[in-house]
Length: 390
Ligand SMILES: O=C(O)C[C@H]1C=CC(=O)O1
Ligand SMILES: [Mn+2]
Image (cartoon, rainbow, N blue to C red; front, side, top):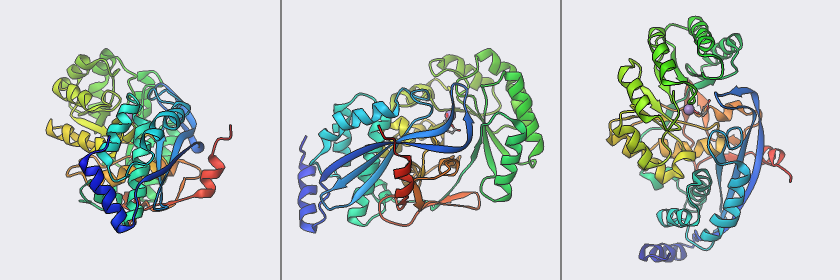
């Protein structure tokens, strides 16, 4: 799909001897052990599986991207096995030889090669942003409008299901000044047991501790109606994805009677889905994730669409390692609004992160890396150790 712009970019590359043509795209599956069991309404994990993409340009620069999954094809329909096969067989051949800087054209090429596969496309696009930034000696955020912030508040998710363990974990995060806002996963115990667990945890935390609850589609409309007053009385700040994504009208009815804002997560991957959720008033906050949007440019567009409908923005995650977290930060840094901060605690829940330096977790914030591409250093030992041998 050569375009006039592509031709100009190729010529510029040659003139500057910074050749950004895509030479190789390699993938590997990695399995990273987590520090504890992480439970959701529909799955639980003791390790995180990613596809790590390495994109090599003609300049010699190698950029890295990550496709995250949660519990196999459970949180969404993509598994690491399918992501790797679809990148190797369909996406990579469509991009080899193209200039990495033709970001939009490459996005169109990927969409032509595969339908949906948003996690796979996001991982490849991430690797290309990182590699192009390294070649041109620019931060990846420079390709996205440039940063408007250099740090983002980051929350921690409590998800073992054992209130005493969760209280101890939260207190540890507070006293280390790592996290002071928390998200608790609901929907895997009975609603009454989950509410008792939540009440116990909130009672043990300082009064002003901000708590988000994520039900991961685990409740019915009736259950939500029943427990909304108790959630409000406890002072919960945000309710994430209480119902099944298809139940838009029911979610809109809950949102209308709730004193707490509803956050849309699994219900909106694509931009038309964001529009549908916003137009039916099924939520007033949107969780941004690369695995949903299918890339950095699309995630920035998703932010613009949600904001235009009056939704507030939350920097969501899928327990990415430092590689995926840094890709999100490159976009989040450039958003005019990011009212709810972010939840990229993933690098901290892995026993061995795949990044050895770059993102700094300090004083309840993630501090943006300073450097080219995503500005992180890959921990090659951890990457090799976690690589799945088939
Ligand atoms: O938000 C989700 O649904 C997925 C994931 C992100 C944080 C977490 O604890 O689970
Ligand atoms: Mn969620």
